[in-house]
Image 1 (cartoon, rainbow over the protein chains, first blue to last red):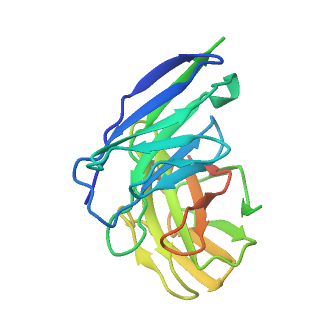
Image 2 (cartoon, chains in turn purple, blue; image 1 turned 120 degrees about the horizontal axis):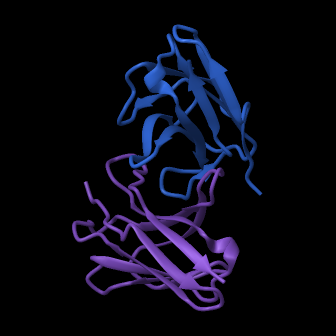
Length: 110
Length: 112
């Protein structure tokens, strides 16, 4: 099963880009990388996902390295409301048993 | 927007009680999931269902059962609640097993 490793915590200044790294060195060819975030006392919220190409939506950008062993979630202009735990996930198994690790606690500082 | 609704935000139950946690989704999703979330352990999958009356065990099914009689509703059952089942419980649904999951707001269960 492909697993992910993320830094435990990060700080980012308000208005600056937040770059959240994730390592998934054992990812297999058909596994997607997903990112979710969880704001305190709420359920996780889907952000973005990708296979091997970079992806962008209204919330964030996802950069996946060519060897697919790591990726970076970019929040281009972080706001205080982006303070949350961010989870990087790869799909595992024959069914979508999404496994969430501890994630990265991002603090956006005024 | 997809809406996943859990019946209670907070619940307090006594040891040994039978507890039902209900989850309803309004987007005709095939797949539904139950997780528990504990500090330092992240989210752990308890059970999931890919169709009505179908269920699969997740990573930590012991002490739990589930029911999916209708497509939109997925229930988590604690047959005899114990204090180590005090946790945040999260329900999720997804259209297919390859698409993103949408989560409810969670139920914080305390067993005393």
